[in-house]
Image (cartoon, rainbow, N blue to C red):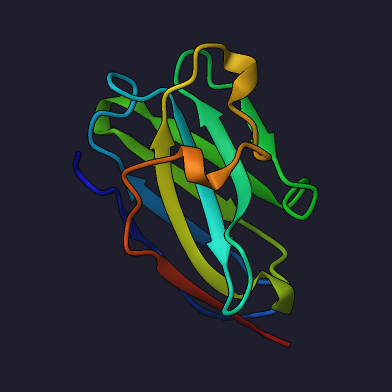
Length: 129
């Protein structure tokens, strides 16, 4: 298994935007559900957004709805997370990982992080007020 590689994090002011990218080798071939997660010290890793390779179906955590957009580039095995209207509470380390699900409806933002594999090293996002 090849770990995913995240990029695009940084420090921004509240209200600004960032676009994260994740190169996930084998996405769309060996795995079909790719998720973005985030974690802050002392808290569990939480799902932010996922995308299903087959039809591009997406699912978002409530905290991400209407602000974040996940998209995929199958040819480049890359998935992006466009984050707009960022808030200080979005500050976290963001990770991507892959999973293979038997039904598209199982690829959801609430899917347990422990089911995903190929975790990357993460990219830090810091939002200042």
